[in-house]
Image (cartoon, rainbow, N blue to C red):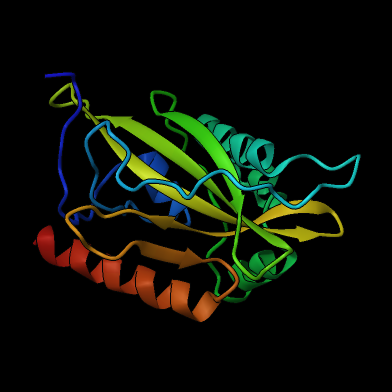
Length: 195
């Protein structure tokens, strides 16, 4: 065995870094996968050109994940969200909080354009979380959506592959009502499993 736990089912308590990705307030998550990529990325296509002083989308996601891994009050990572996403998190009362998970590793693979949306790109990443009990690690494919704003590329949401032919789990930071409903459902599922 290569030290990676293969687990394609949806589960509620995945780990701190994935929980933070799901808005940081609740220990939630999604099914993991083996070390192999779960889905093939489309052939590499040119990403919309950034302004000369703009940070590239891959670097924005790398900075966001590193800030999450290190933990903190969330303000530094919050700066990497779109304006609408920041407003929605405030509106629904779920600010980004970063508990930190120094043992989590991430790999930022590639950026590719969102079809028919010149101001958006997807950035493919893999997050690996160790399980302190089993010593195994679980890998998640997470695809981030970024929008090109006046301040540069900013994160508007992400999708997590759940494996086993399930649809990806989507978190659209720019739709606060949908995020709130999803997190409430996950919280309720977590409460019923701890009773």
